[in-house]
Image 1 (tube, rainbow, N blue to C red):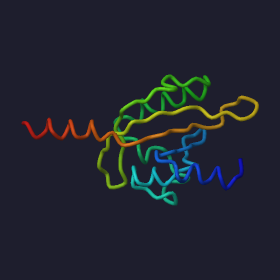
Image 2 (image 1 turned 60 degrees about the horizontal axis):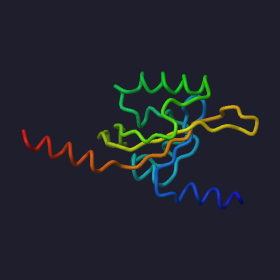
Image 3 (image 1 turned 90 degrees about the vertical axis):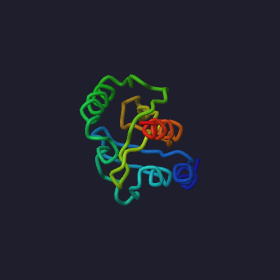
Length: 133
């Protein structure tokens, strides 16, 4: 596959794709990630994943992240989890998130990929429940 095609696949994917290094610094951020989280690539690249992780979830996230990187096994690999994320405007959003470990040719973990999309059904259900109070 050519580098141009690889770049086009990443940038034009319909879901948010985020790749980070072993320290959780964002190295790839596509247009769908910008649409979902509100940060442009120029703002997100080089930043910690904390820009999209709600503060109350950070300790658990980083414990799981470090454990997965160290062991080479992600607890929720292949599963889609619904969770909360932080938009650039400070609002919280429900997202469906999956992730996996990225390995080099020798099998060593070199980073983490996350794929996300909005979970509008969960957001609508919460909004409806709040309106019934």
